[in-house]
Length: 493
Image (cartoon, rainbow, N blue to C red; front, side, top):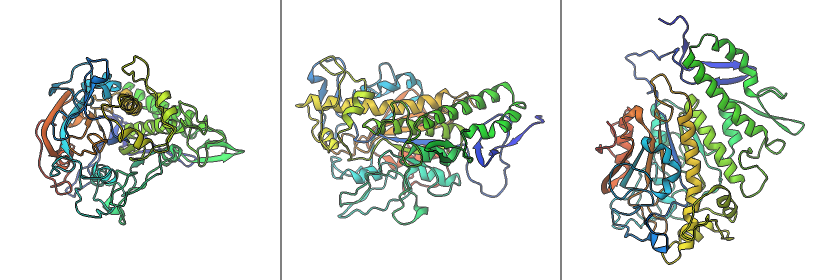
């Protein structure tokens, strides 16, 4: 029997800074009782790819414009070679082109095709952008004229509610503050909804990584124009305020616990270094620097997005906040700065053998890509591929960080003890199809997810039934998810 034990949610407190510990062997598990209690141990993050992705066909054996080919929206082969393999079964190398950045994690991945947010729509093209965006995590099918802007709980909030979190307290991140409804309902800038908030149920999003970091790990202040982290106005970091308590704690930890705590603290330090490097322009209103540099220029969006991925990984691994959504941008948004962002962060090579950049100078980048990508315009298709590659590298960053923390007491990495969902609200944004949505899952070993597999469910299987199945596998109590209660085989167990 261990002589040294600490409560599961013990905080280290120093100089007004609270620091939540990662999961350690010495932590006392919550007491059980006959009374209903919030579920514990669930971790879930949704990563939304703005502007969708090319969802028709891609043939890697060809090196001319015929490598990109169109498939009818009702065809179950939609997405073949671009985001899912040609045949279901065990994943083999190489992964489909959109998923190339995740190659090293293929053994921890599951790809699911055939899911739809509007199963009864004959060709999956009867909705605008903003409604599928809002339906992505809610599976709320709205029909009729003005569809409204109020949606039921999204799956992230459904899980968070079961865990006892205050409505609206989970991490909801998007570097863009933009939102619109196109006059027919929905939201282009939000995927997370909680009915406990009232109004239109939208969970407020955080657009500044510094705010997210402070909410979890510290408090930002300024002295002489320089950014500070902590509750005092000197040059100490949030860790400097608690290191005395940490050092005392480490004396009582075993080798494995000590390694977990060291990795956790180093990740906080790394993020802090990125934040403080942005001084004096960082605090209190501007986003932090990180690779690339924060200059007030076109790559700031990418700097913010990468920092957000780091914060989500740290928050989940430490259980400071195990539920998160991260939108890479607002759906239907775009600006000329994408040219610089794609050139900086993408490595997609086109049919001419060179790295693809983005050429448009238009203020409506969304229209330039998603509405013009036909096989007759391979340059536009390749620019869309390059933009998708950029976003998938951010998703890779989040997944790899979760997987790089030391293993937890059950022998899994934080990624394996989580479910990370990557996807978008259109099967192919040019067609506006809502059939056969890209669904890529990472981790999930704890919940007996079938890793390393491509699962092809029947075309037009309801996305809500997928969420219900996932929630049941995560042992989230409930008889249905927004009216969906069908368990889908082959995903878990």
